[in-house]
Image 1 (cartoon, rainbow, N blue to C red):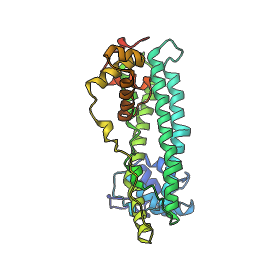
Image 2: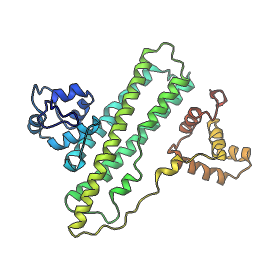
Image 3: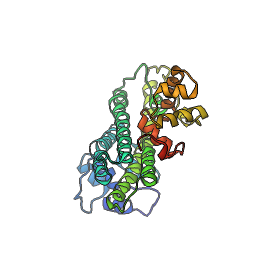
Image 4: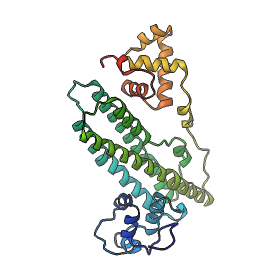
Length: 317
């Protein structure tokens, strides 16, 4: 490998990159690069397998914490990389973790905590699927039109970046719940699943960072070039910032979350707190917006993780 440790180069041996950072195996896979390349260089392998060398190196350098210039990449190639990553998560990795999770915990119905864990996981996967399908169907289609010199009258990449949230950390919540509340009973399988969850969280975090640090600025530059070619970009219809989600919950909102965790209906919560049902409904809508948690099961787990309620106080557990 080149003596310059600040980045990888086209002349570097691919196997040297993998030896340096084994996570680049996933990068190779998502570029459609197959194994069995012997002692060939990055450039030789990419050219032989129809992969844009510059884009591969930008992503490989970024993932490895080295210098990476998004201006060198091909957006068309990066989009294919991101789509393959989405397919990996949705069609292989997340379903595989679910199967192993079912094997590791008691989902027969006798263990309510196990059922809550599985429900949380299923709701999380639904959120990830919605997140990635939006990117596949809306964001990538928008950029593909940009590459053809066409620009939307109502959309810019800022609309995407302002609402783009990292979907990895919620797996950390699941890991914490399992570690804190599920009796392991020397379950080697569960420890193995936890390791898979940790790896998946790191992979998702890295994936989102590629989108934020490489994809978004590259698209912004493309928008600028299209604008300079004579097309006028309208004001972006930017949605409200996700910053509201990070706001500290009010005491009233915490009380409502506790009531939800106890299995109370909106009317029961309203009677308990001397509020109207309409007010409770509004609070719940605001909670969903702040926390991006839309189900009672998810809010129950949020309450447990954030120590708003003791597990013994939850109905049926």
